[in-house]
Image 1: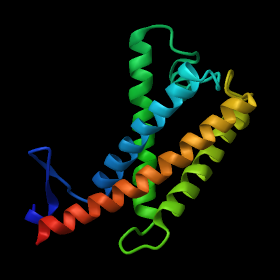
Image 2 (image 1 turned 60 degrees about the vertical axis):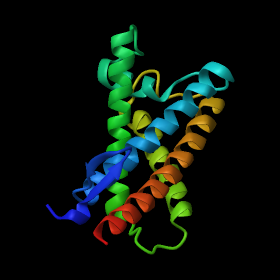
Image 3 (image 1 turned 60 degrees about the horizontal axis):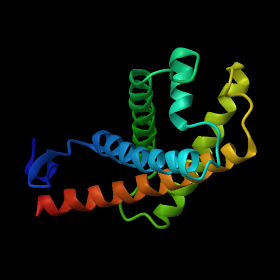
Image 4 (image 1 turned 135 degrees about the vertical axis):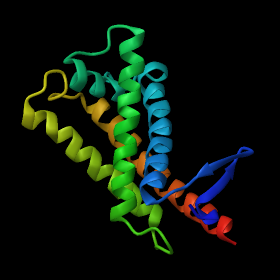
Length: 166
């Protein structure tokens, strides 16, 4: 492992092995922001009627989470999925010196959300194949913000990796 693949974060050394790890970190960071906004949309503003972690729960259990353990496990699954999508973004979109990276992140988030919401219709998953307009709007907005956070985090991590190489 080379020195340039290490980063000091909060006083601790974090290993940035490769693009996969950076994509995973960026996807999870975006997933955390996305879930905070989704919780606000659901609990504070009462705008949407289905949480993103409900999706993970329905795919995992066949129903919305019934207890704290299912909520936590569903949230972990949802963040894992967000991390996986971040890995795909890291490999598909070149972010070194890339122009309009935040716009590309927003478009990627929108497209990912479009295909993710189309899958339940195709596979006829209960609870997910029919969304309210407010929920669809909320999920699109949070997905676009997720994409922007992923793009910015990857850009930041790449810059930190280059600084560590100096």
